[in-house]
Image (tube, rainbow, N blue to C red; front, side, top):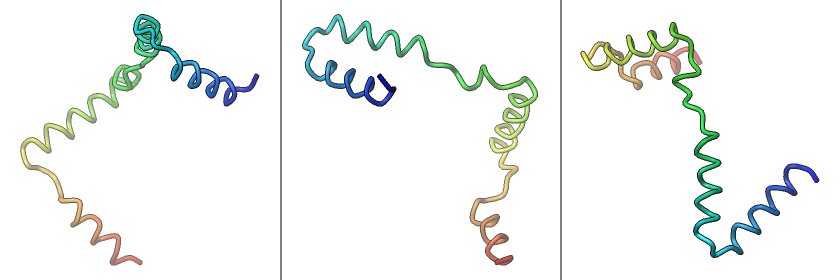
Length: 75
């Protein structure tokens, strides 16, 4: 069975069930599988993001419209 067929079968089974305990177990499986993208980043990437957030908090940034206007002038 291919992945799309499996997904459809699972959706069908999910829609048919009225067992809250089963739904809770399935949700728990999905919750366990979630990965935190922050943890997957390198320390250097995390530091760069933190630097950017600190700069933004201090008002040290350029508005998006200003940047977009620069690009529009090139085209």
